[in-house]
Length: 362
Ligand code: ADP
Image 1 (cartoon, rainbow, N blue to C red):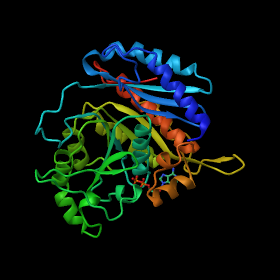
Image 2 (cartoon, rainbow, N blue to C red):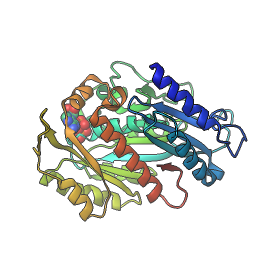
Image 3 (cartoon, rainbow, N blue to C red):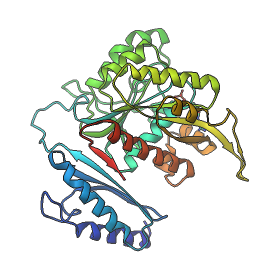
Image 4 (cartoon, rainbow, N blue to C red):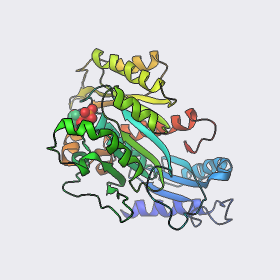
């Protein structure tokens, strides 16, 4: 970090510490309520305010004050302050760390067919949540074509199993992750994968040490068949993000995707249009797969539209290199898109999961 950024950071910390934490009476920073403080070269500052769950509503005003104070610091151009609520429940000795019981929000990333960039979006959105200061996990449920091992650069690492038969996650790029691809040889016959899909999915949800997370992103198997419907009914979702390309055939799929989630009570957090256009270095945009279709389909179905991701070589290369763009180049224009879409999705988690919103983004 250069000196200028270090100085801004110090001033931000001082400003935050000048605000009293209602629970402990100490400064917000000293009391440990602030996590994930990030100061960027372009003057963007983000952090998470962790409120006790039982009095979280009192912290909305504290968050607003923290936001306003940090904005006053010289060199700060914009502020993203995320409010999360943490259960004060101390972890009892011997409690099982396995399962998703302490995950606050499970968000499914789905698409009605393969190849539209669902996994690319899932991984980069997860990195964006982590970058916003949220404790984030990524579960790759695509039993037929797991992509997390490649996208996250996991290589030959294998998760450990404890004596209590709990599987540890593999940590990569600030995420806790698990994938069927970590457990099964890529060369296994498809038919066998299908047969074990259900039990593998159950194991990855219930027998993995997810621990305490703000968000767990599920990279769903593509499609809207029985496997997917069973899955979305089995997991308590805070919402779903649907990925599509702008093409007409893909749009019929978006409608099927929306219909699938209608069968559950999970709200649609939004539709993302991937491969929306290609931009040449002179700034000219070519809409290779058509223009704006996913936005129109989302609007027609009354679902929020989260944004567009262009066809981008750095994004493709980062996927192949196992180094997610958002984690490795957070200032890249495409990474910024993902961060904005993550913020919009979080805002919809709060808005669409009434009554008790636990994450608020400003
Ligand atoms: P899915 O999960 O829907 O099957 P993937 O995320 O695996 O799709 O993406 C399929 C391929 O397309 C991958 O090689 C990925 O790198 C590439 N890809 C996805 N989105 C983009 C994009 N916006 N620009 C360039 N390449 C992309």
